[in-house]
Length: 199
Image (tube, rainbow, N blue to C red):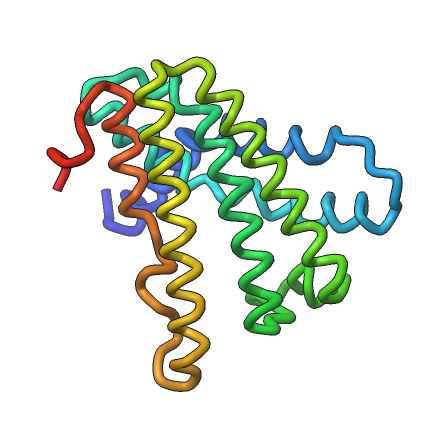
């Protein structure tokens, strides 16, 4: 098997690991009854791209399994991460004034800053509600740690966004915005490892 085929196979397996969480995230925001047609249209437009946001829930699942846990237990936290990272992406597009990503217009580019801000806020609210529900099924201490880690992750992203805005033209992206390292910690916490032992 050549390396290109192997890479495609690995990506397909990772996508499969994150698919259920992505589907829950999409269903959460598209099944809501929005009174405003433009909001509904913008939510559906953004939801088209959520199918490819499988990396966060997949990493969470992989980390949980690697630490000896059941990856199925991470699906709802994974769905929350899909929505929370989606919200952060939309807000990032507003800050950066990114009208396009690749060949597709962003929510900001298609609907403008006001609607993009509202969509990002909706995703944050829905993501936090999913996270709250998922935490109800965890032992109290694990839920508290995961909540704290996610909060800290987003505070790091905010700090990175601020740093990035001061470095315009010097760096394309602040490394702190990549944030994937948190998924391994969330996954390990599911099976009872203490975060200080995970370096």
